[in-house]
Length: 172
Image (cartoon, rainbow, N blue to C red; front, side, top):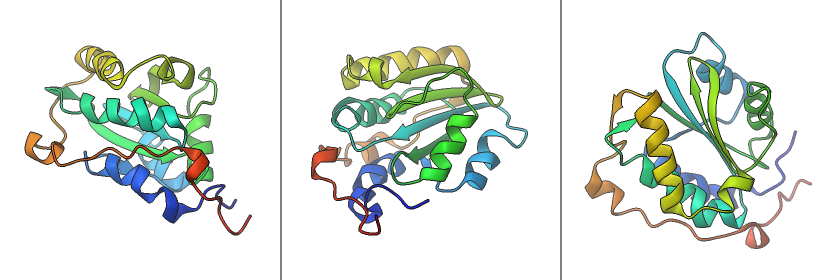
Protein backbone atom coordinates (compact mmCIF):
# COMPACT_ATOMS: atom_id res chain seq x y z
CA UNK A 1 0.00 0.00 0.00
CA UNK A 2 1.55 3.35 -1.01
CA UNK A 3 2.03 6.06 1.60
CA UNK A 4 -0.35 8.99 1.86
CA UNK A 5 2.44 11.49 2.57
CA UNK A 6 5.73 11.91 0.77
CA UNK A 7 8.28 9.98 2.87
CA UNK A 8 11.03 12.51 2.12
CA UNK A 9 8.82 15.39 3.27
CA UNK A 10 8.10 13.75 6.64
CA UNK A 11 11.68 12.62 7.24
CA UNK A 12 12.42 15.44 9.74
CA UNK A 13 9.30 14.43 11.70
CA UNK A 14 10.72 11.00 12.50
CA UNK A 15 14.40 11.91 12.56
CA UNK A 16 13.88 13.87 15.76
CA UNK A 17 12.57 10.71 17.41
CA UNK A 18 15.57 8.76 16.09
CA UNK A 19 17.80 11.42 17.66
CA UNK A 20 16.55 10.34 21.10
CA UNK A 21 17.03 6.64 20.44
CA UNK A 22 13.66 5.64 19.01
CA UNK A 23 13.89 3.06 16.21
CA UNK A 24 11.60 3.49 13.18
CA UNK A 25 9.69 0.38 12.13
CA UNK A 26 8.59 0.49 8.50
CA UNK A 27 7.30 -3.04 7.81
CA UNK A 28 4.90 -5.53 9.38
CA UNK A 29 7.83 -7.85 9.97
CA UNK A 30 9.75 -5.22 11.92
CA UNK A 31 6.71 -4.56 14.10
CA UNK A 32 6.28 -8.28 14.74
CA UNK A 33 9.96 -8.66 15.64
CA UNK A 34 9.53 -6.12 18.45
CA UNK A 35 5.93 -6.54 19.59
CA UNK A 36 4.69 -10.00 18.58
CA UNK A 37 7.56 -12.52 18.48
CA UNK A 38 7.85 -13.44 22.18
CA UNK A 39 8.43 -9.87 23.38
CA UNK A 40 10.00 -9.35 26.78
CA UNK A 41 10.18 -6.22 28.87
CA UNK A 42 8.71 -2.82 28.18
CA UNK A 43 8.33 -1.21 24.78
CA UNK A 44 7.27 2.34 24.01
CA UNK A 45 5.52 2.64 20.65
CA UNK A 46 4.93 6.09 19.18
CA UNK A 47 2.47 6.19 16.30
CA UNK A 48 3.76 9.37 14.71
CA UNK A 49 1.65 11.73 12.64
CA UNK A 50 1.82 14.90 10.55
CA UNK A 51 -0.83 16.66 12.66
CA UNK A 52 -0.16 19.76 14.70
CA UNK A 53 -0.62 18.04 18.06
CA UNK A 54 2.12 15.56 17.12
CA UNK A 55 4.48 18.45 16.39
CA UNK A 56 3.39 20.72 19.22
CA UNK A 57 3.13 18.32 22.11
CA UNK A 58 3.42 14.59 21.32
CA UNK A 59 6.92 14.28 19.88
CA UNK A 60 8.44 16.96 22.17
CA UNK A 61 6.75 15.34 25.18
CA UNK A 62 7.99 11.86 24.31
CA UNK A 63 11.51 13.18 23.72
CA UNK A 64 11.49 14.98 27.08
CA UNK A 65 10.14 11.89 28.88
CA UNK A 66 13.06 9.85 27.55
CA UNK A 67 15.41 12.08 29.54
CA UNK A 68 13.96 10.48 32.69
CA UNK A 69 16.03 8.27 34.98
CA UNK A 70 13.90 5.21 34.07
CA UNK A 71 12.77 4.44 30.52
CA UNK A 72 11.32 1.50 28.53
CA UNK A 73 13.58 -1.30 27.32
CA UNK A 74 12.62 -0.77 23.68
CA UNK A 75 11.75 2.49 21.90
CA UNK A 76 10.04 2.26 18.52
CA UNK A 77 7.89 4.31 16.16
CA UNK A 78 5.71 3.85 13.09
CA UNK A 79 4.47 6.73 10.98
CA UNK A 80 0.73 6.85 10.19
CA UNK A 81 0.17 7.81 6.57
CA UNK A 82 3.69 6.75 5.61
CA UNK A 83 4.49 3.32 7.09
CA UNK A 84 1.00 2.09 6.29
CA UNK A 85 1.50 -1.64 6.74
CA UNK A 86 3.65 -1.22 9.86
CA UNK A 87 1.07 1.11 11.40
CA UNK A 88 -1.76 -1.30 10.60
CA UNK A 89 0.14 -4.19 12.17
CA UNK A 90 0.92 -2.18 15.30
CA UNK A 91 -2.77 -1.33 15.65
CA UNK A 92 -3.70 -5.01 15.25
CA UNK A 93 -1.53 -5.76 18.27
CA UNK A 94 -3.51 -3.32 20.43
CA UNK A 95 -6.96 -4.87 20.82
CA UNK A 96 -9.25 -2.55 22.70
CA UNK A 97 -7.17 0.53 21.85
CA UNK A 98 -8.99 2.50 19.13
CA UNK A 99 -6.86 3.60 16.15
CA UNK A 100 -5.37 7.01 16.82
CA UNK A 101 -2.55 9.11 15.50
CA UNK A 102 -0.64 10.32 17.20
CA UNK A 103 -0.70 7.63 19.82
CA UNK A 104 1.84 6.70 22.50
CA UNK A 105 1.49 3.17 23.85
CA UNK A 106 3.50 1.31 26.46
CA UNK A 107 3.63 -2.46 26.02
CA UNK A 108 4.72 -4.82 28.78
CA UNK A 109 5.75 -8.27 27.55
CA UNK A 110 3.86 -7.63 24.30
CA UNK A 111 0.61 -6.40 25.84
CA UNK A 112 -0.47 -2.74 25.78
CA UNK A 113 -0.74 -1.39 29.32
CA UNK A 114 -1.07 2.38 28.82
CA UNK A 115 -2.08 4.57 25.89
CA UNK A 116 -2.06 8.31 25.30
CA UNK A 117 -4.33 8.79 22.32
CA UNK A 118 -4.93 11.81 20.15
CA UNK A 119 -7.91 12.97 22.25
CA UNK A 120 -5.62 12.99 25.31
CA UNK A 121 -2.65 14.51 23.50
CA UNK A 122 -4.71 17.38 22.08
CA UNK A 123 -5.46 18.50 25.65
CA UNK A 124 -1.86 18.23 26.89
CA UNK A 125 1.32 20.26 26.64
CA UNK A 126 4.65 18.59 25.93
CA UNK A 127 5.48 18.87 29.64
CA UNK A 128 2.14 17.25 30.58
CA UNK A 129 2.88 14.35 28.24
CA UNK A 130 6.42 13.98 29.57
CA UNK A 131 5.22 13.99 33.18
CA UNK A 132 2.49 11.43 32.44
CA UNK A 133 4.95 9.16 30.64
CA UNK A 134 7.53 9.48 33.41
CA UNK A 135 4.92 8.32 35.96
CA UNK A 136 4.15 5.33 33.71
CA UNK A 137 7.87 4.58 33.27
CA UNK A 138 8.34 4.64 37.05
CA UNK A 139 5.57 2.04 37.42
CA UNK A 140 6.33 -0.24 34.49
CA UNK A 141 9.97 0.12 33.42
CA UNK A 142 13.41 -0.62 34.80
CA UNK A 143 15.97 0.41 32.16
CA UNK A 144 18.15 3.28 33.34
CA UNK A 145 17.68 6.50 31.40
CA UNK A 146 18.09 8.86 29.76
CA UNK A 147 17.90 7.48 26.21
CA UNK A 148 20.56 9.97 25.06
CA UNK A 149 23.02 12.12 26.94
CA UNK A 150 21.62 15.48 28.07
CA UNK A 151 24.25 17.26 25.98
CA UNK A 152 22.93 15.49 22.85
CA UNK A 153 19.32 16.15 23.82
CA UNK A 154 20.00 19.88 24.08
CA UNK A 155 21.05 19.94 20.41
CA UNK A 156 17.67 18.67 19.18
CA UNK A 157 15.40 21.32 17.72
CA UNK A 158 11.84 19.89 17.53
CA UNK A 159 10.15 20.26 14.15
CA UNK A 160 7.07 22.49 14.31
CA UNK A 161 5.41 21.48 11.06
CA UNK A 162 1.87 20.22 10.53
CA UNK A 163 0.07 18.21 7.87
CA UNK A 164 -1.24 21.16 5.89
CA UNK A 165 2.32 21.86 4.73
CA UNK A 166 3.31 18.23 4.03
CA UNK A 167 2.93 17.19 0.38
CA UNK A 168 1.04 14.03 -0.46
CA UNK A 169 2.93 11.13 -1.96
CA UNK A 170 3.18 11.80 -5.72
CA UNK A 171 2.27 8.19 -6.55
CA UNK A 172 -1.31 8.67 -5.22
